[in-house]
Amino acid sequence: EAAETPGDSTELYDNGESLAGLLDYPPYIVYAILDEITDQLSPEIVEIEQQVDAIDELVLGLSHAQHEGALKRMGEQRRRILLTWQLAHPKPRIIEALIRQVPICCSSSPRLAREVVQYLSDVHGHLMAAVDSCARAEAVLARSHSNYLAKISLELSRATFDANSTTERWTMLGIIVVPINIVTSFLGVNLKVPGQDRDDTLNFFVVLACLLIYAAITLAFWRWRQLT
Image (tube, rainbow, N blue to C red):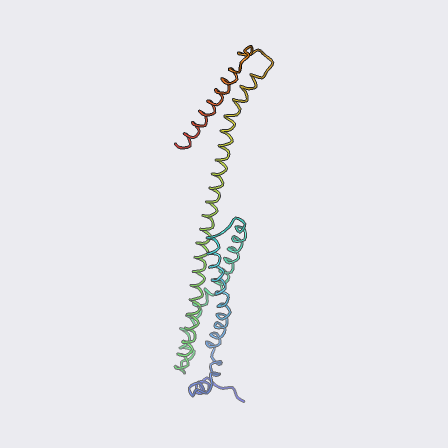
């Protein structure tokens, strides 16, 4: 059988018998390819949005053991968003160029041209929605990353504060214990010291009272420095 001419295909389409005549027109073929690409992208975009929302919720209640996993998931989703955006972003401009060329290619069939333009506009809308979804997912992921870094910063600040507090306590303990240890060491040497010839325990309690007073004054000064 002889191949149908565009006019014959248009007649079939106008009679409502079949849309097969559209396959003879390059714009419709391009539309079919782009529509298939768009259909392939849709599940990927839905999954990306779900993963990004899950990461956004995870960051708010992130435990210390989940830090590495969360950062890895953010990197994986950023790569997926970039690849999807690279696939979807140029397509709307291609469709806009095709829409401008359809009336020229289908000048003999205005109704067919309108239908093809409608199909292309539909795919154009889906692709623009895909690009917007990628932009939204990237924005949510960027916010999650900022929240993650802020949480890490707070945890590091808290850990630094705790380490400084512990170091300060040990330093204060050393300030109290070292002088006391030096004094008691002098009193325990095999040399004559004041009060050694006394038979009572007065000197012992005097030294003990002096050490306790020193420790109390040192602790009071430390607490005063903390309060100020």
